[in-house]
Image 1 (cartoon, rainbow, N blue to C red):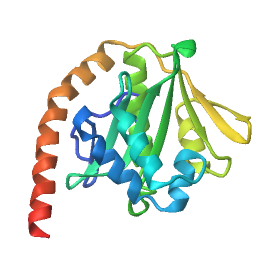
Image 2 (image 1 turned 135 degrees about the horizontal axis):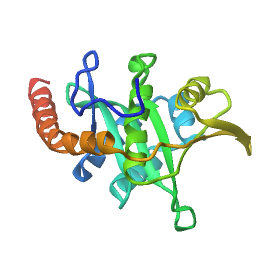
Image 3 (image 1 turned 180 degrees about the vertical axis):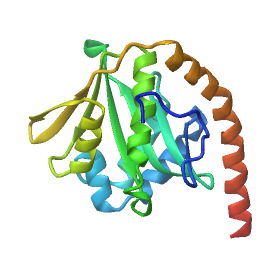
Image 4 (image 1 turned 135 degrees about the vertical axis):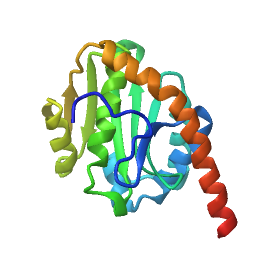
Length: 199
């Protein structure tokens, strides 16, 4: 797997990755609410309430933030959240991952990371920061896979990935993804509606 992501909507087993639209923050909320307490703790570094998650998801569509979801039958089962740093750290962005329990150990986070790295490259970010708990060996392994420098800060492991510069391939692949994002968003909505009717 290269740093560049696969084309949007490409099948990966029975799921695919695409960017969430601004109107789909509720899908991120529903995904995070489905996480068990252990997975929530890994994602946020501490225990969080349902209200906290709802507020967090509302910020997913804030300017500069990008969220990628791994979709199965119209529902998100894994997520990568890309959030630029503060005005004091304009060349840094943070990334965080979550995968629902039935879908772990399928390489989903690794593929999501590929998509996020492409986003960082194309937007000119020099550092992609991943913060995880010391016991989260899987995320540390994924970060190392992409050449991250890992260090311990305040009881957490901080991984610093330095994306390559954008090139023709990374830019074109993102341009190709955009119309597919809207197309698959419509398909996913149809699947959710059908599922609700069948239920």
